[in-house]
Amino acid sequence: MATNGDNLPIMAKKTKPAYITRLRAGRGAKKTTRPSTAAKVAKAPVAVKAKLKEIPREFPGKLLDQDAARVVRRLSEAGHEAYLVGGCVRDLLFGLLPKDFDIATSATPQEIRRLFRNCRIIGRRFQLAHVFFRDKILEVATFRAPVAETNALHNGDGSDNNGDSGENGTLLIRDDNTFGTSEQDALRRDFTVNALFYDVEKQLILDWVGGVKDAEKRMLRTIGDPDIRMREDPIRMLRAVRLSSRLGCKVDRKTAKAIETHAAEVLDAAAPRIHEDLLRMFAGGAMAPAFDRMIETRLLEVILPELFDHLSLAVKAGDNDEVEALREALKVADRWTHAGRKLEPAVRFALLLAPALLTPLDDTSKRDAGSQVTALLKPIAQRIALSKRECERIRQILLALDKLAPRKKRRRFSVAALVKRAYFPDALDLFELMSEATGDFREDAARWRERFRELFPEGTAPEEAKPKRRPPRRRRGRRS
Ligand code: ATP
Ligand code: MG
Image 1 (cartoon, protein in one colour):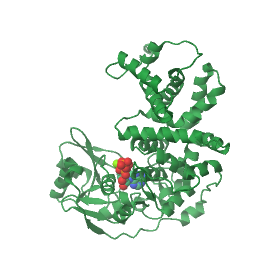
Image 2: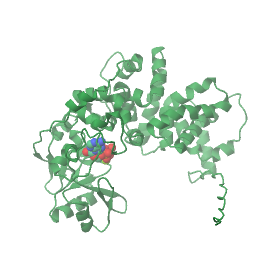
Image 3: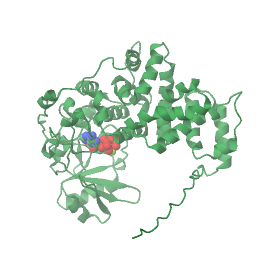
């Protein structure tokens, strides 16, 4: 696939980008049907054949985290197997700087704790060791057994895992407690490029699943049958979109097909995990391509039907500006991320949801606008686990935009009071971002920034005073 200047994938030359075609088709154009229970059982996972390849690979020392390398060495010296694993090995292979380094080992959490003073065991369902350093925490996990061993299949017993639930339950992973070998640990991971172990001492990649070859082909592929892997844990569909967008790589044909087939099941994943993955799309600086891929794969229409319908209606009416404006804004968010400018979660969601939340307000009086945004946010909040506080902040930020943009006629308001509001920095971030995306209101954005700096040279507004709570009424002692 071709890449643009930012090394992100761009569409092959077509008359229309795929996401526009998808929007034109509208919601439910090709309904995904959930497989029947019989089909689910028939599709029980087949054991993936694994054959170990050891591939010599030298990564420049400055790309490796030296503390992580030391932890690995210490574990090896104590007689355990220990490797760098997962996202960091993948990122190194793709020529990216890993953001964190995870470690996998044959040592049990208790054995790890005995080796490191600065170590704490966390987790109940699956214990992990956290090794603490001044500036970071390294996660050291004992090799896990594959899903079939821990018995995720066909249990339908209502027990929970990661909070997942739903009628897809027969395949959802529900228990995760057994330690395993490095091979088993590799096989239970999601994508081949995520299942590589790096032996720091020998400078060898241990590859059970053909991940190195896939990384060289710039290809994201599930380990094993993609239909089963997506149904086991539907969040993997969002992970596929997020990772392929960030890595600028293709998604293997069968994996992509499985995502399309099972898109409707993404809501079987726990809402907080969907919330987290959407935020991670922004944090990885690849929200714009991820947005296109969410439209193409139908994930957007399942997770945020309000936004999908809004954009889709516009496109069907011959107006592509609405979706293009949002894409542009997401690209600015990505540029800011690459430049080290971070957006608060509420700003990220406000940006993504703005077209769906703000447009209906055109016919609404100012007074009703707040309650209308709150009402529109309610079903969205349930699907993606937005907290009450986040919803409130999103509402405040979006409604503040109207005050930040210049108007000829409007009710007077106190500029100083607005700048002092706790939500003002977030609202100004969004206003600046939108003005950079559209080219409108640049001077106004600069003026508001200046005002904010004058009042708060430190850069942060004071937290809004919370309404004072009445002290709880004292209970009288029970009379006997
Ligand atoms: P990022 O760079 O965004 O952190 P990552 O691949 O490191 O990406 P993590 O969520 O940190 O993502 O997960 C670490 C590793 O755990 C992954 O590389 C993968 O091997 C495994 N993993 C994470 N989520 C899943 C999942 N849902 N199913 C199977 N394996 C998973
Ligand atoms: Mg990671």
